[in-house]
Image (cartoon, rainbow, N blue to C red; front, side):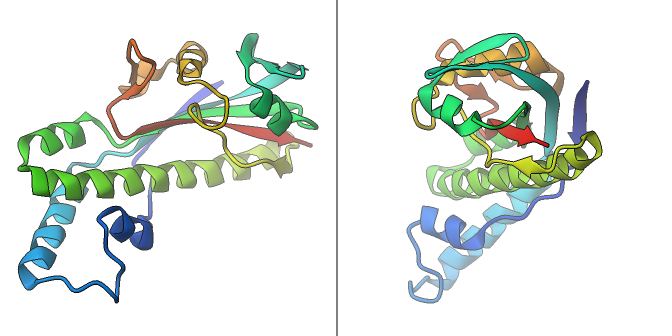
Length: 199
């Protein structure tokens, strides 16, 4: 069964956010003007972020040396196959903070867009982490007590083309996510991931 969650709570990793902007908090000196610009940009970002996620639980049918079969779909990846060894199920998940955030980034001057880009990257990571924890809590009710960390297309040898599998199994359009011709995701601040689970 596929589930959709809206209004997912999220936390932004402040250290990572400032690092993306090129600053070390407490060490880098920022002018009052720059601090004001960052704070205003973050507040604008928060107003348009609409976190939504979709996920589903699928059985693992086969694990080869260089591939995994889950939910009837074969995924070619040695690293993912290794990541799943010893697990019987997998949660496929996808999250996004919405297309309104993309539109705001496009409308702003470059300096503000850079701030939004950094904040959006950490915001969607926060949404993914929040959904990840919710999935693990739910898994216990299905007798799943062991989980490996979530693994996303583009990591290791897991190609971005795997996003098509997420689309086929989850129906990403139901939460406004589209897979492009180059297999990246729109809206820009969107993440797909797979979580190994077992009893």
